[in-house]
Length: 298
Image (cartoon, rainbow, N blue to C red; front, top):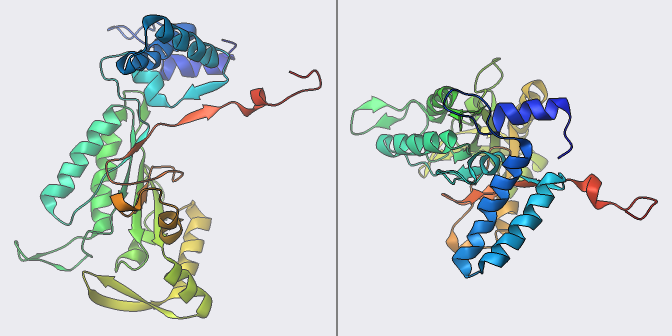
């Protein structure tokens, strides 16, 4: 494997195996061999003979060693080890119930510990100031629970090698949408979250037509805002701090290949992969510079 000094430093800091004293005990080539052997071993579960498993191991090893392809971080970290968690990111559901919220937080912590990231749609959580019937108190709203998730992520380094990553999503018609839009304007807040507003075709049409936009939750309308003003707030916040992004819900679900399994409302932390609850994505990187033909035909 041809690597630069900085690449070798990153490999040693994040991916190469260490002993109990913390000393690196694996070379980059040995990492590639460990990953290739772990991935190829799955072929045996589908009836492949040992010789065929070995052939796939060699093919995958050379892809890695030549840096033609690299799998995501959890695969490089966990493959060939006892944990065996190779997925990069997961979407976890949220319910408007305190026990369910913290069950989701527990699952997120376990995913972060294994090297994965998580995406959440906070829209099911009731708005700030609405009654909590069992306690006669008032709800603190989705943004307050995002702070809890952010703080928990801060304390858990993914797989012991990197900080956790989350995607927080809120529907554009949620009554707390303005608080959500400005959540990252204060420096250093929600540094473990990317934020995206889930917008609909109806909202974008309301912006275009200069219409007012209802804010609703649980079948009850909490107020109205000018759709264009709300859109301008999103743009201003994104210009200042990079968040929120926009998640086009209707477009995503028009392209949903398995609509019978449910409606997609969330993505992985970087936003490139919409997922249903409890789905995961196993990402990888193709070295496109190695896939082109030069003047010599290579």
